[in-house]
Image 1 (cartoon, helix red, strand yellow):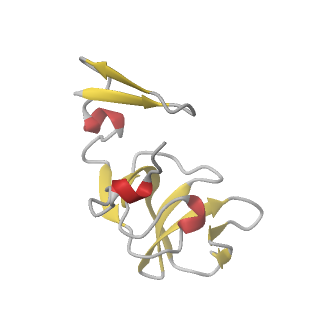
Image 2: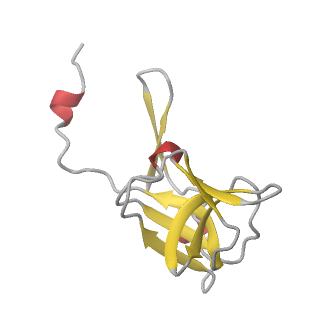
Length: 131
């Protein structure tokens, strides 16, 4: 396995050999049976860097903190939103606020990572300008 280190310069450094945490399970802190994977099916969290078709790594063993991205069932519907703790906690997505008071809510877990599959249809010859 090789690791490519990219910087602001145009040079790429290729490092060959064993890497720390090259096991994807360790890298994503997957601790079964507490970890679940979900596929995002909306654009509601684009402002937070989570896009449609991303795989969301959710951990049920983490305590929720203010500002965490969480998965919660609200009135029986699963939502992935940013949790804002305060006098009256609420959920946030793309500037849409969801009040939690008076709703049937159940926390499912905290988002611990995102997996985004690359698009193989990209034409790299057109994407990069030649010097």
